[in-house]
Length: 161
Length: 416
View 1 (cartoon, one colour):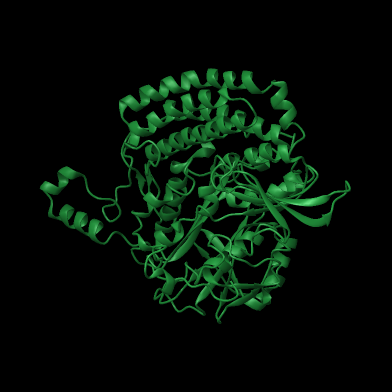
View 2 (cartoon, each protein chain N blue to C red):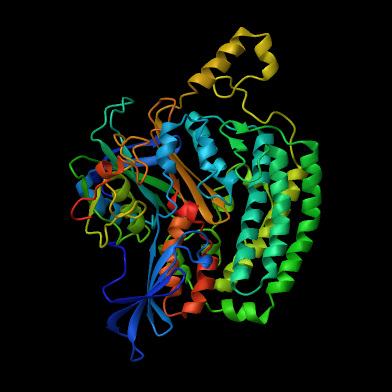
């Protein structure tokens, strides 16, 4: 059983159960849930709550882990809120193998750093890409046409790309 | 590139294939070779690049490099209104557009607390099953082609074309139908659609027999797939595989049965499984699934309920054209819907449906405005592709073609 003290908040959103845990306790919480039967991580992603007026958010980035128990078919969403530059959290890819690419994608798209991930590199964008496209302050149409005049100033790779 | 091969002497041996000697010793007295496979190799079903380490002809490591087909679909969704997003969902798994539409539509409906009327649900099932058959036909045709059965492609694309004709009849579009929308479907099916569908349902079982005659007992096909690309049931579960990948490993996990949606619980069909756990098993599962899909189509057509195909909610769907001429209220609703769209209550929801490839999920977050805050597509191909190394380990490089083929990844779905 996941210890009650790990759960900061719990609720139901449109029929889906969810809990919120502290980002420092994410491995402990997911390990407890896995031992409980939720052995499949369906997906892992991030939501950027920049300038989101729908409620008071504890932090800008929300990480979402969707877990499923294949036997009882119960699903649970684990949320955790992160801030910082860059935001950091422990990797869970050793507990849930599908998280390996999901964490790389979340790093690529949102710039969340997963500590302990063996190969945290960009997965969808080119290796020398600048910025994290799914952040809300990254403009749509922020991509400059390649080989155009502005391209040099927009997309110059950092030294350690 | 950081993703590139290790240090060593590289030579290009053919189009899209580069070989690098790594200097690492293999078990057979030779050096390990790093072979770059793709991204334009014809057997990679799109633009998949694989970095393969070979010991002699045996595969020791596989590293998929993806992203060549990344189109920023999730970013585009955030810039579009809720009803406009449907058009974009068509395009990630481009072999099963109506199933992508369905996942998105169900998620939006769940968050808004509405449910599509029974006739719309039955039409959704019909479109989903037609798509499943079309998607398996593309897989069967191209996989057959890669394993030497040239004629498979001709036979499979013949039937797939009938399905595209059906798509055209019901939605006006052959590939990206955008037929299933939040609140229902685009329009009711025409009588001609049901004529064509009846003919299709009657002829399809015979066509599937034809495919089986060509492949099931074909000695070349059997020797190239039996015992190749083994994925044990435990591995399939741990790696999060879904669809024919997990059912081909003997686990009867099908979202249509395990977590039913759109009224699938009321249809009588078998979940296709195979205990072979290899490429041949996955082939059998897909053939069986096509037969079951025809069965579902028959039931759906026979029991198709009458009634509307859209929810009766003027705040979500535009009023009928004739109402605009007589009702001021209708004009206002029409104007609001096409200038601002509707808002979805704040919250988040995850809905998963079974596509030809596995679990096709849609996670949406709304901040209460008329555009989504975040839309995440959980694609089956993205997760199934991670199982590739496990399946290919210690196999010959020639078998790799069969293994990539039966994983049935759509690169648009992997890269989104």
